[in-house]
Image 1 (tube, rainbow, N blue to C red):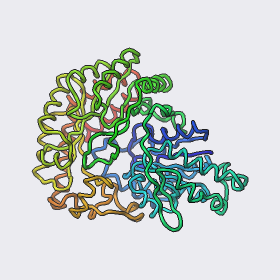
Image 2 (image 1 turned 30 degrees about the horizontal axis):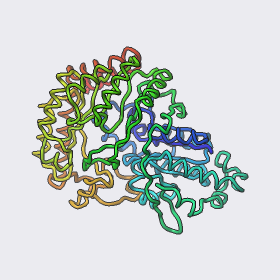
Image 3 (image 1 turned 180 degrees about the horizontal axis):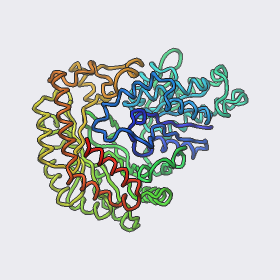
Image 4 (image 1 turned 90 degrees about the horizontal axis):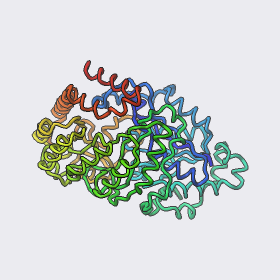
Length: 522
């Protein structure tokens, strides 16, 4: 079957640059291709000419995103329709994160408007935890794939193909999704077939059914590395965009604000990872890779083996990864740096011990201080991620976070305001505190800014601080972080960490110069 997988537009509708190719979508697409389907991945969020520089002010432009839903002639939505028409898929698959759920719903509606007979499947983190809500409020979505999609999507699409193999395929459903809606009803999967596919949610008999969850994929080497060549607009992506890699899946920690529900860490073999790096470097000229594991340094022995293998292969690449302050040692960081690691990203979250405890971060202020000293001693660029506005947080807590940022002095300090992601522990805590509502309807998604999804009152962030006071406090904290990051020494540190990209790609250097001039002029 011809399968069109779509990464919905979000940052592009705002005018922002969305980095990297859609890794999860391409991973599922590669598994479908290897099962014999014709797969096209459409990254509709890629923006070659961003007008908004720097994500510190991103939420100020969310109005553009909401306005697009009332603009039938919006260029992005026109392109979406034309692309679906031109591809003529037998099945459309859409990935869905909470922030751009409204856009995913709109893509589904456009798909059905182009051809009502074409089944639409939603997957991704938001669809997985809100399958009931997704199917209830969006009739244009026929099926939801929950959890890891490689096997579930393969089984579901195989069943759709078998169903379409009779009279309906003769009418054209298997040829560009040109069958009539009545044909599609005739080819609809029977309940028994659907109920045999673990990890799928669907409508049947006037109700919504959720099949038992599928077991996590144990052998990640059983699937080929994500084939970036499946992307229809791959040539518009920079070499660095193509360097996104997952070497493992899962996180053993249980932070209360995190939407990750997979606590069992599974690893790809070192050789499997090296094969992907080698291919991407040789095919796309990528010299810098981003390892997107939740926490790359969970297994210290594996980190050492990976670094030794990279050095042995002499790839001459740079790379960065995510880690935790309690998962690094001086020896490990020196080994990583020796093997080409030029940057690490670390979740600090708060300077308040009480807030860290409510987050279940399982780290202490002293552990953070110790890690900061290590990063400086080894000389590896590091980004600290901070979060304010969690339930129960006070003004004092927020200022502790600001003061702590100045104390530990990360090379780059990223600040975010808490957003309630569905089904997390903190989401349910927000419901108990009257800050969060349990569900949303389509009108909410189309009218409310994404950073206010699921809030009982979009103006109230926390119950301990009045809305007007928090609004002023939020702006102050963002301004202070912004000014901190504009420091020449920190910009120089970032530039040094990106030397390998600059020497191989003038495009990256010009892009960073543009950002620098924008920051300095702000």
